[in-house]
Amino acid sequence: MGKIISNFFISLDGVTEAPDQWHFPYWNDEMGAAVEAGMQSAAAMLLGRKLYEEWAAYWPTADTDQDAAQALTNVRKYVVSNSLEKADWDNTTIISGDVAAKLGELKKEIDGDIQMSGCATTVRWLLANGLLDELRLLVHPIAVGHGRRLFEDTPTQPLKLVKSETFQTGVLNLTYVPDAG
Image 1 (cartoon, rainbow, N blue to C red):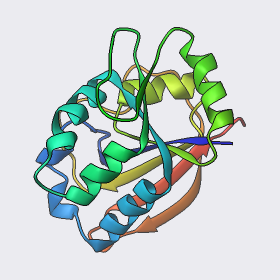
Image 2: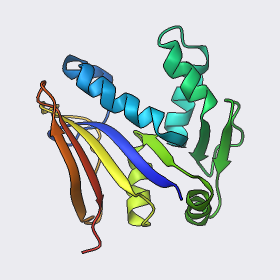
Image 3: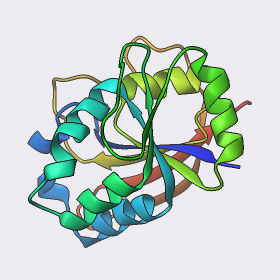
């Protein structure tokens, strides 16, 4: 049975928007290994429409990081969207309509991790619908002060810390699971 696992670069003040503007000074081999481990464990990727459109416009023709480009093109991708009409990027399926039921079925069909990067709106929805299995946060020691936050206008979601480590840069690598209480 598959697990839906979401991954975020996040600041101390909860900002996940535009990590390319604040996260790179904290990148090191430890973080690279953590990100790589997540990518290698992916039996599939789950994306929201916005992130799918950004990645589909970039990765299939990316000149840099050919290994990542190849891995992302080859992995099965599922896009949660009721507005996207077609998905041209290789190995992509659109999930629409009764998304909760379809994702429940997908979790039963896939043997392995269904990885997500970003997609805060989708993650909030997954948590609210009991579909997110793990939330992995790379918490950066910076207060960005502006930008979209992971949890904006969100009902209370109890989480349980199941794994933690501190990188030399001060970044915390945290793994949470929903806590039913």
